[in-house]
Length: 599
Ligand SMILES: O=C(O)c1ccc(O)c(O)c1
Ligand SMILES: [Mg+2]
Image (tube, rainbow, N blue to C red):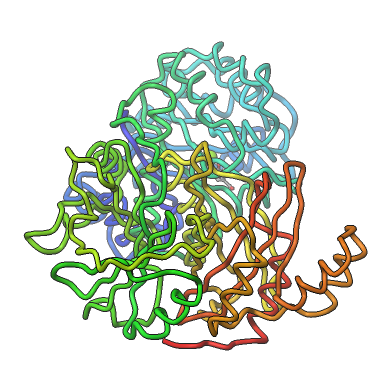
């Protein structure tokens, strides 16, 4: 289907918005009046710019407070409408949106509303323009799509139809019954379909709409369910995103437009009108790759954690550190040196790496060059929204390119209690949180868990995990509201152990430093749970935190931070979470420690 986006959904000047929409692959745009008023371009120049960019102007909007107003106000409305219709002809836009009146003097009189809209449609028809009437959820008298349709039906004019907006419909409840009325509207009378999702918040609906809309699949509405209803009517206009959102207003238009277009690609797949390559769900973590200007501090931490350097890349300054199934690459190549130690790449075990990459590409993930030197295994890789490189790996499968083959074994062995990577925690840039979740869910086929809020002493952090079905891939995506403090809002690698006390002791005895946790935390633990004699003292000595959910127990502790990375040792027994109740204590401890032990 054709895709479109309202200019209000993107940041920047009108030309920046148009360029971003076109680059991301949209077919058309809705011009929001303010964007036109503020543009130095003439309507003709805007029309030409859109044509150059391959964009049609699918809607001009909004006209407000048109119907059911006093006669003198309506006369002024018609005068204003004539101006706007002339403008639309210059733009080459053939559909105008009229949203239901919020005028203080508007009367509750459907016959009058229909009469006014018919007169407006008569005028529009002279200009070859169609009027799409939309019920705002907070409209003074008309605030449901069924009511708007009754008025359009009564007005009975070929140039008058309705505009359905998923936010206004679903914000009022999404019980299956509430959508049944869509089937009563003939498809050709649905002149336009605007789509937005939103998180489920209990708040004033106007504020909710103006600040918290998000792209389909990023909130709590069943937008796909609504679209299915609309498609059954025979509607064949565009799927158009209209998202008022405080974050997107500030974020770069380019990435936002890509995120937006991805959401429509996924939506079309969900409702069965598009079939991108099927998701290939990763089955494990092949490796995590750290880049660092100085391998020494990283090597010291890894060594103390019980890792051994088991292999070296044949041609590049990359070492493989391994312990059990946990594999960490340490890359000191030139390009890696620029911004200190960080988690740059994740190798995901994939049953079909090439197919996984095709899916990613179809969903607009930037595809990375297939490995870096001619003799290297040609690995498929894409970039996540935060820039993390994701490699699709088939470790030791004879028929597929094997990243392991690029490495020469050094003969070292180690297995000191760490079994595997439990999870990877990636800090998202503040404006990429919703995008990151949708990306990992749709591109990688991971499932998103609940978003949790975590208090940081200097701001609020939100965090949400995406996982594969057996939990062998867990990625925690988090974002801070406060300006990022790299030493605290760092990425981390959590390592699974069967005995966190033994692992923590071994690490400390090998010279590693654990993050100290305040005594108050342990007093609170003692109040909440019963522990064996001496158990809490041991935890306090080592900085081990404890949590429990309906499924089991969780014990975990943290290393100090190296550059922008730290490690966590976790003992997970049935527990499904990530220790969120302990995160505020951990964040505060990291702020006060600030003990960056290297580079
Ligand atoms: O918030 C508003 O005023 C507004 C305007 C136009 C729309 O299409 C809409 O859905 C909301
Ligand atoms: Mg709308």
